[in-house]
Length: 319
Ligand code: CUA
Image 1 (cartoon, rainbow, N blue to C red):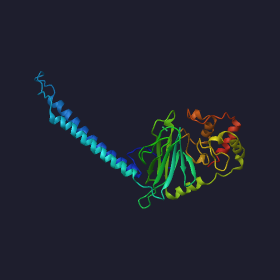
Image 2: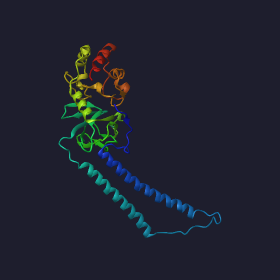
Image 3: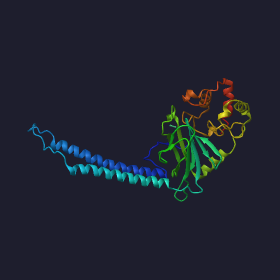
Image 4: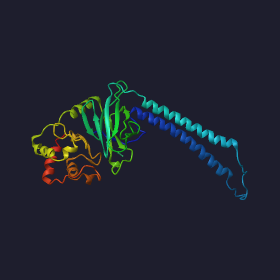
């Protein structure tokens, strides 16, 4: 995986994020001007009208009521707010009115407590917590249009370097689009408090060169190879309640409550960023998910060590 970028709206790599950075600089410039003027007048007043050591009792001229000054401090801020409103509305409209090109990559991201389900409906891929997209360039734009849904509470989808924040609301469909112009791994995070593990609802977006993205798609579309040594573990998996919540393509497991495990080992973390996805962590996770992520909705299955070993031997083959 390419080095992970620090999430910052000031390091944009995608079209909507460029616009958001420009707008924030514009707002910051106006705020800086207001600060300099107000602080400047305050400092000038302190110095100019402060107590004089030569005549400590003297007071500066006392002014009561001034229509001109009151008009100025009403009208000027009003104009500033109108300008900020109009400029912001123009940026929002500019981002939202972009039509979806017919060949754009389509994604559905579903918020769950506390992980992200990632679906590529046209490609037949289902994964979790990791979005993979191709890089875009001016000659060959490759935007990705993302439909946002929630199965439980309100979440918010935010990858600061790629696009603005968008709420993920039950019974409502929202949309965002991204057009990353730099290969890399970008960190996102649920940005709406959604319960105990809101903080562990991480999201990464991996932007690939175009040919590498095609390879990722092919690997995800393939069924995981059946490894003979994993047979016992596979049968155990199919006999347990795992399959009520998890899917593995080509097995009886077709649950949709938890993440699709078909290519579990291709992902970098467990529990949406709770731990890195190593066999040791995976074993600890299956043994007792709440030890790694308190409140995780997956129950500990009370498996003994031999069962855990069998299950692990199978899960690590899901590449
Ligand atoms: Cu999901 Cu906060």
